[in-house]
Length: 95
Image 1: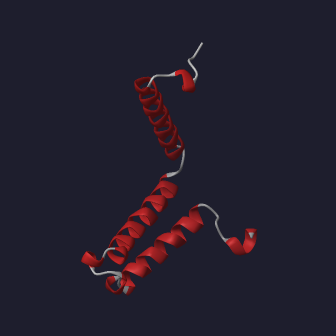
Image 2: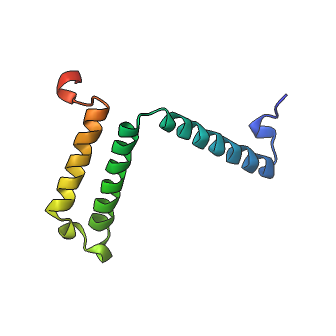
């Protein structure tokens, strides 16, 4: 029988939570691999565009919000549209 969390030593709890994180990560990869190529690609595109825009906008050393270009915003908008299309996220129909 498994030991209860409250009865574990600190090292056992650390190992337990590390195993939990590893299991959750493996589960996320499994679910991600069940998506079509286009779905995965749309998610990765949105993430990449968001990362670039936010990295520029939120850090003064990168130029701050004034350094975000219209091109950056258009790329983000296009990525959002691809994501919406791949996952049927049109809120006008469902919301």
